[in-house]
Length: 329
Image (cartoon, rainbow, N blue to C red):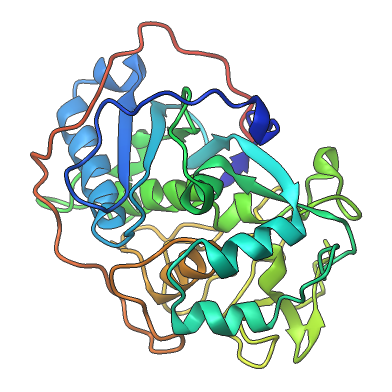
């Protein structure tokens, strides 16, 4: 499941407008727009309901009172992909935001201890990091100006609903949608700049997840080598929470490697399995700048997310009559 980059622009260039469809509570609101490729599908209602169910898990888990705007479309190849707007900011600003602009959980304090208070990032010495606009908005506020991300789904190879007959060779729509929403928020593929030569790898700005990529205790990992081992750790490499994907070949280095227990953010989907957000995805969202309703304990192995919000939740939607051209990678 590849993530692409629609464009990135300095924060100062963003023009924000008042959100028109914010929820009444203090949690995140993810506003989906469904492209005509979905609304004209005979299974449109089922597809939209599955995406809404995935969104509900994020909205019941993330406590930042921000709005995120995502355009969903269907494609006829691959499995899932996302094109997301990025912002470049100084590493020192990002670390300060993490320390001062969020409610610090135990995970946050552990993660901050592994991030030095320096003018350059500790991964490759560049002065900057690249964040999704949603991630930066969680820390610094603001509202969307256009779409934060476009998510593409090949629904022809997916089980569109978790009820009724299931094709064991198809992939779970909710799991794939959650994988790509993660990347729009800033973890998974879009959280790593490894493999993105156009964005300056290996000496350019790093992604938020690159700050938590290790090969050993105190040893950071930032390489495209397929023989390298890299894992997600928030305590300076002491604890391996889950391995990062290092397969290359067009797959995302910011995703998990995968193993005996499938996870939402695995680089390669698992057919015939229904997967919800788990402890590693929620831990990652926590330490890159989101406040969680219930903070997971890393290593607990608990698959969590609070009860689903009613699928009938009202959302701002509009139909897109013409499908834009997106360079998905």
